[in-house]
Image (cartoon, rainbow, N blue to C red):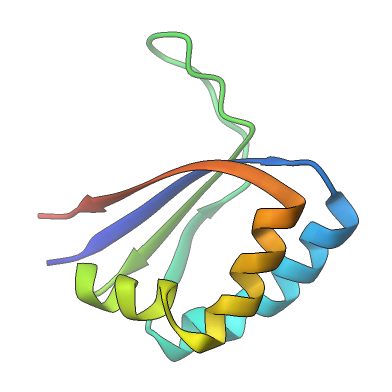
Length: 95
């Protein structure tokens, strides 16, 4: 069952965040993750949610997501993201 990592990111240090963007792609490829949406325009339809930068990643399943998220390969990139931004994130199980 597919799993989706949905992240609402507020970038505080664009220069440092650019470093993260350079590092994250190869880690995703290695673990079979792929971008479905990455920072595109959003339009609020209901409620008062105003995402800053919305990213949606797809993985084969939740276990594969966790392999990637906690991997040594992603560790450096994740640390840079934590320093350059703040985020709210969820893992959504697909159908």
